[in-house]
Amino acid sequence: MEAVAREQPDIVVLTGDIIEHAGTLPALEAFAAAVRGRLGTFAVLGNWEHKAQISRDTARAAYERAGVDFLCNESATLEHGGARLRIVGFDDPVIGQPDPARALARPLPGAADLWLIHAPAYIDTLPAGTPGASVILTGHTHGGQIRLPGLTLFTPPGSGRYVSGWYGGARGPLYVSRGIGTASVRMRFFCPPELPIFTLRPG
Image 1 (cartoon, rainbow, N blue to C red):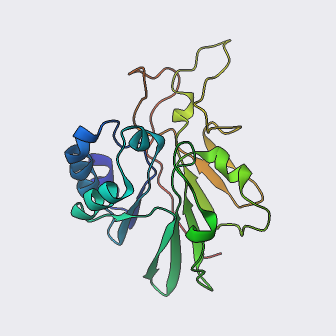
Image 2: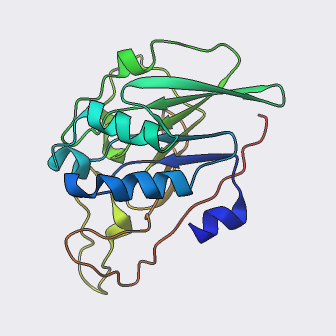
């Protein structure tokens, strides 16, 4: 929260796995309200919210109370300085039901497309003919979280060939964030947390 306050970003995106239990929804609301962008904040579901049986309606209500736009197979539009940005949010691919036809149903001519997908491997399973994005932001992998020298890197199901950082592909440039949290084991090793900050410029 201190880093976000210092950077004062125009847009903040939350790519899922913010909480692991339904009982911590108040913490999700407090965190989301504290890290909002100046122009907008957008959130999607991760597999842990699905495991906690947090429904789409429950998540939407919690995020709305925090002043955050919740996107589940839908899109939102931002206009600033003469530029238009369409933010497309997909349901979690690991446990949820992403629907690219519904998510991309409202094309915005002349706008850049920013996709939010929790688990990056889903991008390689999209049907042929699915249009690409200007940039795709994902998480889920934790960057491997615990990187032990000489041992195979472990990433959760839904990671596929992705670990962390930038990747190219037919759908557009994709970034996998290591994130700021942990899963299962409350530690990181040779894999520091990150809060990536991007500058968007006209193409």
